[in-house]
Image 1 (cartoon, one colour):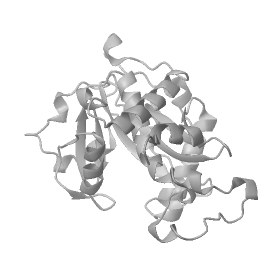
Image 2: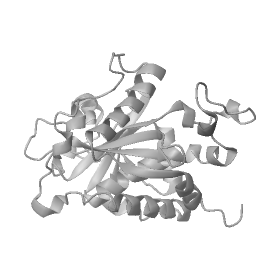
Image 3: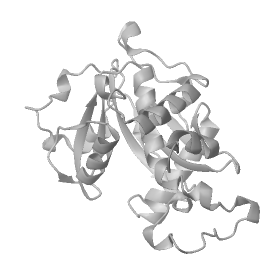
Image 4: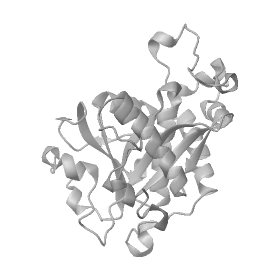
Length: 266
């Protein structure tokens, strides 16, 4: 469609939201539980129906809100290892260090507090457009008619994940990080490469919820090579986040301090 703007269309229906309160962070935990425990079975069930881990105490969290209904469609987090607490590890350091290609990048040389890992991307199943649903009515069970989604809204569902990724990148850029890590499938990396995110593979493929590898994106590539449509979307997301928060710049005193709202969040 000539002149069609993914960014403007996406912004019409969704908005990025920084989880600035424990209540908002709980919304992210609920989404994660729905996807990682209920749907995929990767995490154990619990009566609270929230999914958390120790990394949440030293991470920034974002939600994606569906404007019309106020429903949170998905979430993502940027985990930052505090420099003053070396025992706080990133997920890849806890589970995948044996697969690291140190000849490509020795992560021990990176400044603690000056880099992070994007993880726990989760999108509710009701906001995913599956191949077999393209020609069928998309009706959500047990919801009010005014919370059903129009065809125009559903057109944006495939862009939710990339919108959340760009939110994580914007957080890292606002913190002046030297780079970010992502544990992902190689086919997802190929898709991100097409968008203009030239991740370097710094780990061998390993069995971590499927075949995945560790990838690293350097600061200079956070948004410089994004294609025109994705750069427009990044700018909208970054602008929205800047109206909500002022993040700690790593270069200010070379430390990362855990935000007070994230201490003992449960």
